[in-house]
Image (cartoon, rainbow, N blue to C red; front, side, top):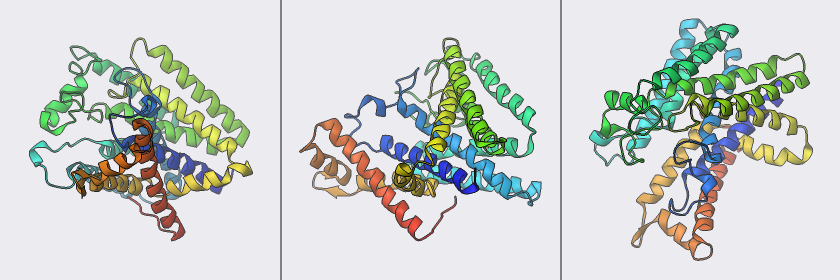
Length: 360
């Protein structure tokens, strides 16, 4: 497999995942959303629950390629680069939570999607770069099993209010600085639940390593197909004992989503030579070339639309209301989300045309 092919499949998967992130994050109305585009209420998983883990998987996959291109750097220089990049991503995430900077800092949510990416990258990158292969697998297993053991310290290990995940966030951040979407202070991107998310990123690294270093493309894809299927089956076996749960980012959830991401990567590589799919691949690859920048822009796009008044409503609500005049509420909401994806794709297209890559 050529370097170009490897990067194409990676960019396509990254772009597809980013498009889905924008789609599920920007419905016209949260009261009118098709069920597959919502997260599971607690245990279990919907298609939407796979989107964020897929993005972390891609972070790990990209880490494999970046590790090969920086072999001449000293260990200290590589570690400083990891720390610096993590700090920047974390800070951007906090600022996004605060934007448009009118709310009180006393109620600022500190965790978030970018913050989890930053912390997972901060922990996963040194493991991927400096820990030998066999020991890496032991570390990954230790994180998943250790997290399972840690959760048993909670009064009601797998509940919203009784889990140790919530207690750690309350101790570290305080109730006013975490998500309140479940009616109580509980953050789905909390501190403790970042530990298994590190394994999600490492699975992306390992899957890419297996694919690239295999003796042949065919053998690599077979190995990955088996790995993906095994991870999914193991997650389903574990589920009755350690429920699949995105909010807690349980170890069974890591195996399920990591296995699914591996299988999707295999599918994308297999489809890559098909000429008829090339326009679609190019479209998603463009979106995947500046993923963090486009993600940040999509959040700003939604927040700015809420700030612009149009009559008695915001521009965000006004656009949705125009769509709802022609379509059912759910279809109008979906069309608004698709419009957001299209706007972000146009930005990505312009950046690709100008050959601009904005690294964060």
